[in-house]
Length: 264
Image 1 (cartoon, one colour):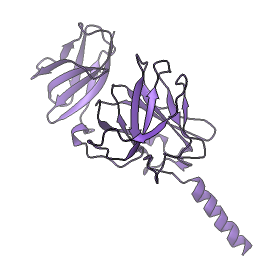
Image 2 (cartoon, helix red, strand yellow; image 1 turned 120 degrees about the vertical axis):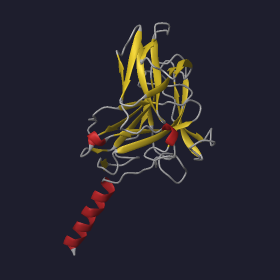
Image 3 (cartoon, helix red, strand yellow; image 1 turned 60 degrees about the horizontal axis):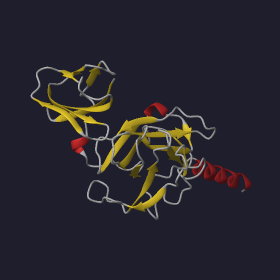
Image 4 (cartoon, one colour; image 1 turned 180 degrees about the horizontal axis):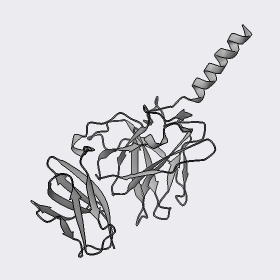
């Protein structure tokens, strides 16, 4: 009897220790809303707020979401993190949980970063992907398949990974949520696009394995700076653009790809 009890306790401890509390949806009876999130490198470090969804007209109809105020005086890598051993729990990355999705609502274009951290504070570092939409919800997908086999007990989110010119408010939700129906944002993996040189001063050349029909260039704040239909020359003159970071949106057949480039 004592041996059986020991086995049962061992199974219980292992199951509890490797539980992953997802999706992080910030709902009253869900995950995230009652976690003890810590903000960091954000000057006075205002708390992460759980607020009503400011825009239920798009892909995210959740009642409540997280609100992060990225201060101008904060670091580019300001963010928030769950507590070790609490919140998201302890879990091992495998094929079933190596894709992390997050929904974001932002008024500017900037990188969103996600990092997973081990109990001893070791990490492989963050993965960063920029949003492509402003003033509406967008789902971003991160591939952590390179982390398969690693066990973590903390998630770190960088909602606005950029040097800011003003305070930015970012809403995020449904971390590890299901894939949203956003076919117009999805780019098949078989389509490739390269930009060179990058950074560039006078011009950039784009190359794709598909026919390039048109392109649009956006500033980091989402302003359309240049566009061209029915292009024949894949070399683009950028000499008149101010120095900075830009997003190049290239349309190939019925798909598009977005790439970041730097004008020096």
